[in-house]
Structure formats: C-alpha cells, structure tokens
Image (tube, rainbow, N blue to C red; front, side):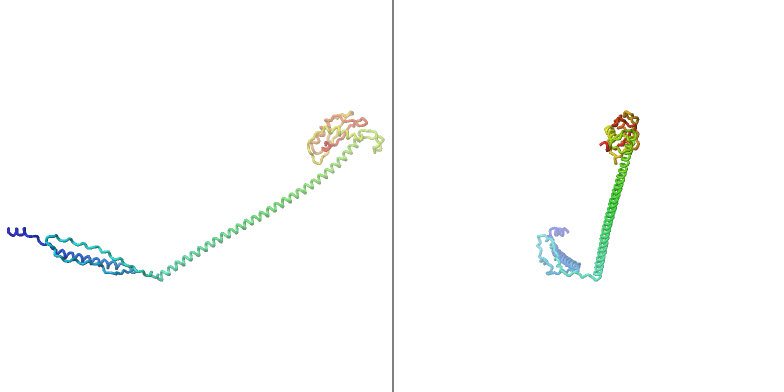
Length: 315
C-alpha cells in the first residue's frame, strides 16, 4: 500500500480528455447549424403570399477544425465561438394588387349612389332655399313699391285737398272782400245821406239869409252856411288823437249841444257808432277838448250840431 500511494503521487499528470472536448465542439456546431437552418425555414414560412424570397447562394458554412493532437504540456484549447450569421434579406417581388371582389364593388357602388343622392338632396334644398330667398326679396320689393305708390297717391290727394282748400279760402276771401266793399259802399252812401241830412238839419236849426247859391224857396235860409261844417271840422280835427287802423274807414255820428257863444254843453252824444269803441271815444274826447265851437258867418251858433267823422279825415 505505501508503494502504491507513492506511485500515484509522483506519477505524471493524466492526459486531458481532448477527444471528448473535440466531440462536444462538433456536436455544438451541428446543433447551431441546425438551429440556423430551422430559423431560415421558419422565417420563410411566415412571409405572406404577396412576396417571395429567393436565395441566390447557399448559406455560408465553416469547416470543422482539423483534429490536432494536443500537446501534453499546453492546456486544452478554449471552446470555439460560433460566428453570428446574418440571415439574407428576402427579395420581395412586386405583384399586382388583388382585384376587389364583386361584393366590395357592389358596396362601393351603393356608397357612391348614397353620396350622389345626398348631394342631390343637398343641392335641391339649397335651390329651394335660394328660391325662397328670391321670392321673399321680390315680395319685399313689391310691398315697398306698393307702399311708395300708396304714399305718392296719398301725398297727391293731400296736395290736391290743400290746393282745393286754398282755392276755397281764396274764393271765400274774395267773396268776403266783395261783400266788405259792398258794405263799405253802402255805408259810404248812408254816411253821405246822413251828412246831407245833418246839414239840412243844421240849416233848419240856425236861420240865416239866403245867398245867391241857395236853392230853397224861403226868403231866408233856416240852416248854417255852406262853409260852417268845414270850419267846425277844422276846429275839432286837431284835437282828435287816434293811431289805430280801422278797415272800411267807418263813420261815427255825434250830436253836440252848444251855448249861444259856441261853448260845448255836456257830453257829446253818439248817435251812430262806427263799430270801433276806440274811434268813437277818440272823437268824443276831441270834441270835448275843443270846448268852444266857432260862430257862423252871421255870428250865430246853432243849438245842436251833428258831426260825422272817420279816421281818414285825420290825414
């Protein structure tokens, strides 16, 4: 036993299992080559039918390492590392696109018809809308034209009515003017007659001798002389103060009582008013302001003197 132990301890080292390592390396290369081949086949099966892959060369392969007798002293060689092989890029051939099926064509045709119908309906609605807008505009224009025509006719009617009213007013004014002129002429005639009557009455109140121009049948005139009325008017006229403007120039008849020396007795009495209170009062005040009337040519003064006056006599 001691001899056996010493022989094993001092014996040379055993040779490494180079054959086993070599076999494992070959086995690993075979397994790797099979995996690559299977991967290429699997990749080609998943390609769609629209493309094809065509290989122009075989896959690169590496030769197995040559069997070399390992030298006893050196250590065993490291395990070889298999190089990474990039699979070739499959070449895709252009193929025509698949033709649509009849069902798809029918569906697409129905969609086109539906779109066309919708488009036609939209165009029809738009046309109806535009037609309605046009009708509204035409109706509005017609209404405005009718209103303008009615307003024009109304304005014409109002203008005609105004012209007729103006003509009627002018006609009435002309008639009133004619009537006023006739009344003025009548009043003038009456005033003239009244003055003549007053003169006759004055002639009857104060007696005087008849002159060559007297037309009476009596040997002695019974009234004042012809110029006595003018002398009275010239005496009273400056004392009458009146600034108004009366239409138709009306007369006022006033009776004055006088003393033998011509002094005015009492308040003068209005026999006939002119229609204007201001003018009547102005004449009465003028007579009162005169106080003393002049004597006639024979030196006598009538007891009553009628006086007729109108605004134009002041001018």
